[in-house]
Image 1 (spheres, rainbow, N blue to C red):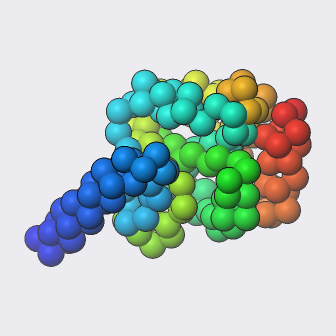
Image 2 (image 1 turned 135 degrees about the vertical axis):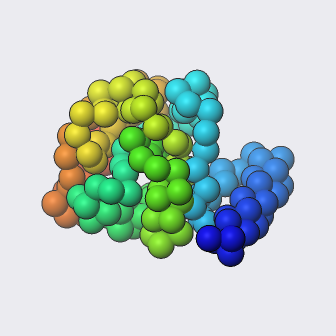
Length: 169
């Protein structure tokens, strides 16, 4: 337990240092190491505002959700393939922070994650009713579509990204 806590503290310290350095450059900090941002709905909405000009895909997930775990690789691949064209954001809803951090260490994603313990953030994009949920925002920052449930394949996710984020719905 103590070793795990020390590892978490070191990871947090390294993540904080990277965020400060990269933040000064105006660069998005990767989520690696299980880092999850706090700040609630206000921080999430502020972050979305900073992404205006780019379409955004928001993935609501939880570590206890088997379908969420199954589609994580699809989101990782799409985020890497569309880097610079489409922004991705994760929302970890109704989950234990420790469990979520552990899962992100096992299966890291290249985009920021927000803690959403009461699904308040998820409700802003018609989420919080089904896990996973994916929301699509156009480049103007308008919510254009919310997909309830898991994607069966990466191709299905890619098609929705094209239809709702890139083409704008």
